[in-house]
Image (cartoon, rainbow over all chains, first blue to last red; front, top):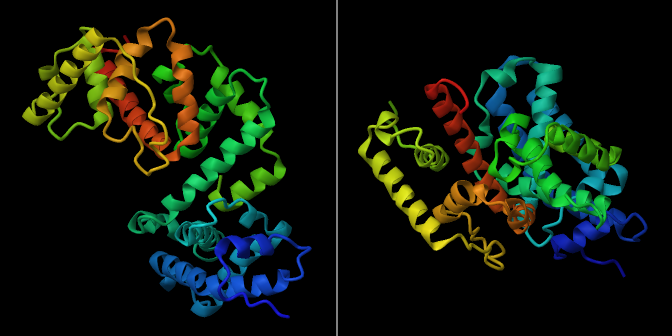
Length: 219
Length: 132
């Protein structure tokens, strides 16, 4: 009997999409595309229109389709690794925020690199005009980094929590070394500790982690 | 002379500078609401110092989408102006650091306030002719 995917939850859908051994794998992806492609298309289209639709003579629909396909490539690759990263599987709103983050980044990259170099920097970043989209997704990356580093550090490392906080302030909040060292929490740490912490934690994120974070966050 | 409203982090930097007797508020701000805010924070600091600083992180606050750092002036005042000088500073801060790693919303508030605080300190140091 063919299972109907129309009413399955986001949680179940992502489970099957990321399980290549499932008999329903392809059907789940079909439902995923049916459910989220219009939304991704809309995000890419809005981003594109905000940035530079008059700067190229390549047809509008082709460019949008191309970028939307790239978004799905990211989601499909490595057994749905980008979907595995997403934890808040009970929240469709948060998941749409996550998809919007990926779609926005790819649109920006595409326009900057191939179509209208420089144009992206000439107009206001519209992310601030879409409250609740990228911000909703951002904590997912925070959560991911914290969990990965805790797992890789083990229980014996004395300063794991301190080091994670330093790393996240640097990576996600763009604190400089001087800003970190000036904080009351870290005033007693020794010279070059911040540099060592950053280097050590970068090593704890493996190549796959780095690729996926770079792909999504432009890090 | 600062006219526009101070951010909370900037105000913390000014209260810290006042406590260490480097400055008087009127030399840096002349907006009456800014002065009121600074004096209120200074009073809070003095009360907290007399009482001793025993702040705890409430259980589950952030699970309920109400990060405890939101609008919690007292915690920052204790954290920056009082705890920092204590010898057991590092040990006391461990639960707080752990919480900042567990709760993204508190992490965001903390980083915002501390960013403002950092730039506030930079401005004060510049006015005083270099880091003190």
